[in-house]
Length: 147
Image (cartoon, rainbow, N blue to C red; front, side):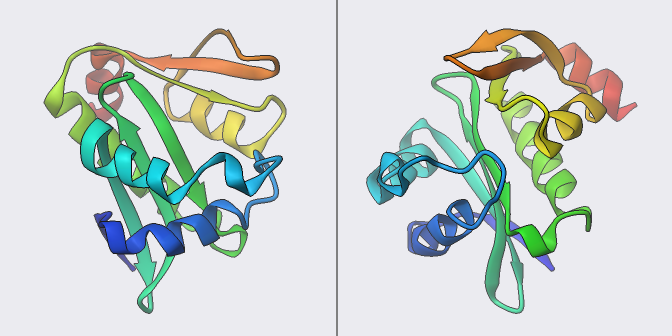
């Protein structure tokens, strides 16, 4: 298992992972284009992938311009192996090395993702869009969580 920065050539595999999830699935895979992914990992922020046997099994993308976690997804068969936590922590470590501005994300209620973010120190602050829970993480929360 290896965590590394995402590259443009990873986008095809990132899309496969994104479209393999059972929770927080896209209603239409065309809603997130390859061009969107490229913009978020090269211009707006940075991304990371987890590889197992040269196959991308998970990825995370932070949007520095929008102070947002744009994505954190795993192939279902790789959940509950610590990969999500590694990607999460790598992404937040980078994010808070770039800015001290709080970061937010949205996720569907009553999902494993909601439980994951709560367990990892995120604070619910309201709703995002029509049906997502909005969470925030401050720099101080991140530093205190790390101990």
